[in-house]
Image (tube, rainbow, N blue to C red):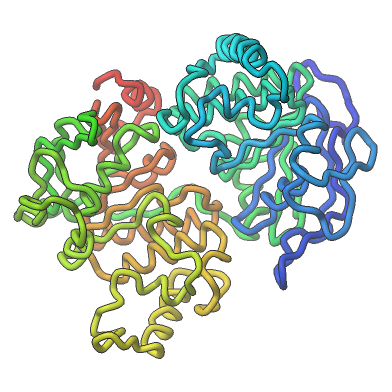
Length: 519
């Protein structure tokens, strides 16, 4: 079957995988993977966490070497021994976690590795001019001379895209590219990618968002457990069909939830502010409340105060002004010079926190799953007597949570860093929910998580809401907010720019609020 999009003619594969196998210890990441990607197309690759998508793209980009099999470019077998060779062959990749040097400027990051050795000043001036032209041409403007550490996450992604364009990549691999964009920015990105395609470039899109697959791609390859389980033309398929291929079972299009019957106010935030050491307002006069049995979502582009808000509510940072009342009483942060020990105090009061960055703040990668289910509760009488831990009790607790939350693999002694992102997230949520809190603070609950795990996590959060738990949810996924939220607060520049009830949910209005247009 030939693949065509509007105005295109049949073309030969620009990339072909033939029998690619890759194994890490006992884990088969890729098992005899074979499929083709046609030149001038947008090709999606989807699958659950651990399905082998990223491993396969890392082989194409030269990070890994296949144990067996071949990669063909334009019909010819080619070795790709490292990322430099991939770049030389016109292959560029934007990773889910950006590959930028924070202390370098935008221009220095883009030139890194291709700057040459002679007449650097002149070369950098030429590169700066070209970068400004590309930014204007593709509506990806960013100051070439600003340091990356001073850019928002969304601006950093623009730098990554500009880096590929500058280096002349003809095959662009994008891993979850819209996680930090507003709906309007996503539409703009898609328009750019379609222009690239129409110019003959090939786009490979790794995403867990099926709406993006069907809005953008020409064809999609579905992987499960390291193998290809299906390929379809998106124009003639459906979300349900692709989701079924991904996880081997049907996915419900809607999740059941009980009626909205909020109880007493659990969290009351009044005139909350936060300033950094330079006096910049990170949070500016926030006022909102959360009641028992409701999910209040905080929407916004990353970098607009949502992370700082969660950190303040969890006791990780001290507010500069304002009051935070929990169950009618002021939280005990006043008069303190720092937040040392405060998260443990908040946790003892019944406030749970599943942080946005699970690897940096929610888990210890080198420790076992069992020990990670214990973090923050290691001194509980159930698990310890003084300084001595109770290994049998810890193991039994971990096994119970693994079964209840469907964590895979099921070995509690396995190092948590070896789990897929979705299963790592399940470990964090299992630990926080098991503490039976009255208030749960959750940051990006399904970031980088596959569709099967998303459904599991969403069911769990709705069940907690129906059981009368108050939930503050920070998410950049508007579809997720639409599914879960009873009320949505939108933030921009550290301020709340609007509030919508569930029945008022509208992505266009929310997108405008994300851009600073007040409700």
